[in-house]
Length: 322
Image 1 (tube, rainbow, N blue to C red):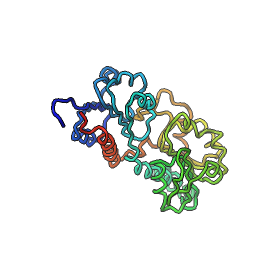
Image 2: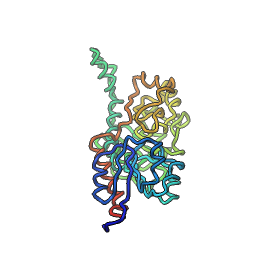
Image 3: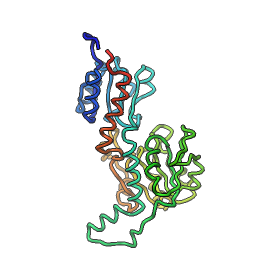
Image 4: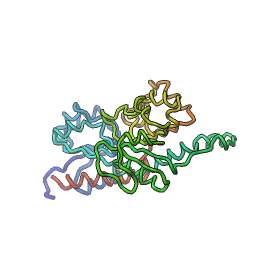
């Protein structure tokens, strides 16, 4: 690297594994690690940076990106890009990176854990035993073996979920509107009509887009021939919660395991607690609903792997550039 030239400057607005800034610095980039920074301050200083690394702290919308006159890349340490105006960023020749490869295995494992807990009443039975109650017959469970599981979205997390299921002797179908010829040893490539006809269990593994927002609504749910279980480790707003609750009440939805809720704030760190509807309370109290706080993929191993994936992508394009 020639001396006398300014290094590319990267602003970190969210916390990440320390490996990520370490690797970028080692590749010749200058990193300003400021996970405590406010949006107001970012708006005032983003013009000073060539790159920005974010998780979900706030949206990188058009108004903010217009101020980013030097910006060359955005690194989103996660999978979804819905908090970034990707179309506008790309119109300004800003490259947008994400890292779904980093937490796909953890997300697949978590989805299986949710499903096992749901079918076998594990969370409910655990609470009962801790209260001194020993109920066996009412907690008789169901096996994954022999069931038909439908996966919507056969990208990184959908594929890993299918792989994790491979030892359970279930029939696994997958539908992905934007992928073709993806059948493998874990899954049968299918159309939605196959899922509607055959599924016992539905897993949502698709990004949140205008097309998938409230994809799972009353009309969608009632196209399934059987009463089904739902697992969601993607985004909360893919499910219309009001319609989910309605179908839990009728029994069309036999149970739901949700790592995500549409009541989450943009940063995924908390809920909109001042505006939670009655449906949320219903989910809390329902014995066949399991909730986790957006932690599918949130493991110590994936934290490091996300950093490795993101650093590789950035360094391949921008390492040692002056």
